[in-house]
Amino acid sequence: MSVTEGTTGRAMHPGARIRRGRPTTSSSAPVGPADRRGASGPDRRRAGRWTGRLLGLTAVVVGLLWVFPIYWMVNSAFLPTNRLRRPDPTFLPVDGTLSNIRRVLADPSFFASFRTSLAVTALTVTVAILFAFLAALAISRFRFRGRRAFVVTVLVVQMIPAEGLFISQYQMLDGWGLVNRVLGLTIVYVAAVLPFTVWMLRGFVSGIPLELEEAATVDGLSRTGAFFRITFPLLAPGLVASGVYGFLQAWNEYTLALVVMTDPARRTLPLWLQGLVEANRATDWGVVMAGATLIAVPVIAFFLLVQHRMTAGLVSGAVKG
Image (cartoon, rainbow, N blue to C red; front, side):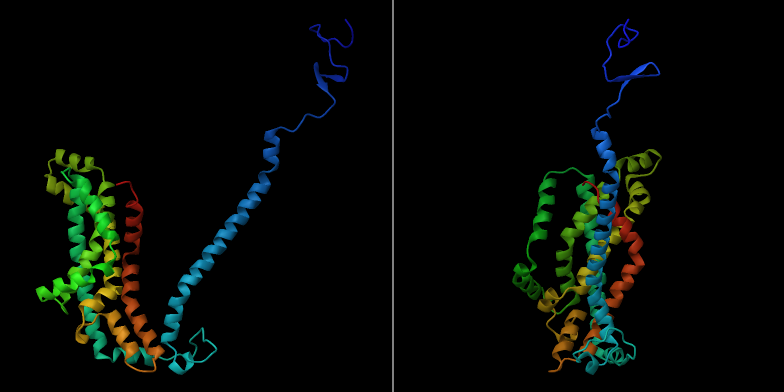
């Protein structure tokens, strides 16, 4: 047997070496795809870090652009008007004043408009949640003829521009004697808020398994008792989220209130703020910003009060209906 032959009698390559009984070649093995992927791993991680930093920076810039108008409104509320009219802006009210806030609070029409807005908003949220809850429950829990058509109708109504309904809504309220009435504006607001609220609550009700109620009925509860003791507490986050939506829409709405509430003594807060701008030929921007800040305070307070419930509601409502 020659030197170039192995123990099995097969010929070895002339360039091969014998190491521990196994033939090995002196040339280096080619780099495979796995090695190339491993070599590019640090580059991919570095690119991922830069992408994350870029996205974080973009989020910070967008957040600052969103928050800055609110900050400027609050900042201007504590500055005198002559300071606001200067060409160089003042970003910090170091030597600010409370005179603008006091002037707004001294206006009797502010509290009248505040009571009107509070009454309209409270009625709108209560009625809209009640009707939307019953409609969402019927859509999700019962099978009836025309169910799918009803759901499509809710979506179509939501897409109708509000401006296209102004004339018919005003004529309807005028015929009922509800122009310049809190009840009339509440009816219009409920009609505007109800489609989206029904669609939102439908997702929450569909996300709660029907088997929970069936198990409760097996334990001796009635269908109504099982619903109120088992299902209804689980719907609390959804009701809060729907209430926040209705509150924001009713509190901040301007156009419908402008059409329905034509009496200056029955204006809502957005209409009162517009009247504050038009009251003088030279607008007192300090007072206007103070009024806008006071209007925003109830919204911020309400949001801080229910933010945990609302966040849980928005997350749990993101289910397939």
